[in-house]
Image (cartoon, rainbow, N blue to C red; front, side, top):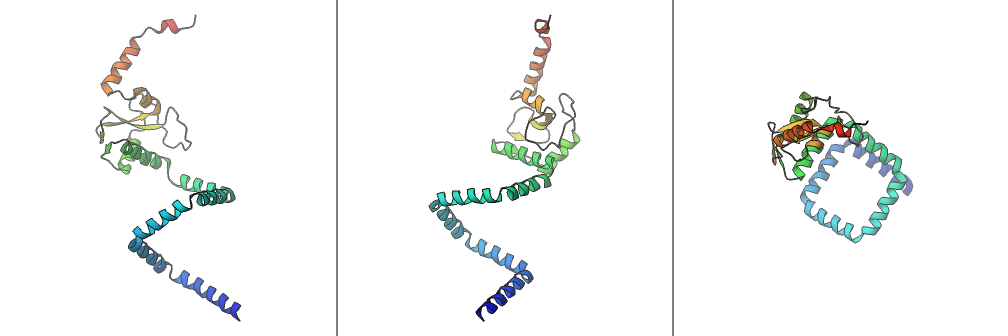
Length: 192
């Protein structure tokens, strides 16, 4: 008799959760917002007290679910267009280094697509590579005069090679550097 009641209760609970999904979700959000500080402290305390056990649990969980985790990570990575990831990462990197960025990710994408060639050497830029190695035609954002405030008027869309070659030089310094190299006598390097 007890077993039948447990099964009925389980079935009832399942139906209730399905019918009231949004209500339950909202209740959970409200509880969290009301108790956020207490929950955060409790979780941090538990994590500190159980550091080694948690580390071991996560390691075991990863080993058991390795393929599922990799598939999910790959699915999420591929779901977001590469140019979107590039723009978000570029803005985050500049902000982390102390720059003020005065344009949105969406605006940066528009600027980059409008300038689909490197603004220095003219090479066609590739916005859709998804591997994590650098290629000559990878799109990069350059601060023209290395100012800490970035706006649409003081940035260039460059290929990776030009950006690395320019480095921390201002545009004037970079121009003079290129002129100096162009004046060099390279005949000494030619093979006889």
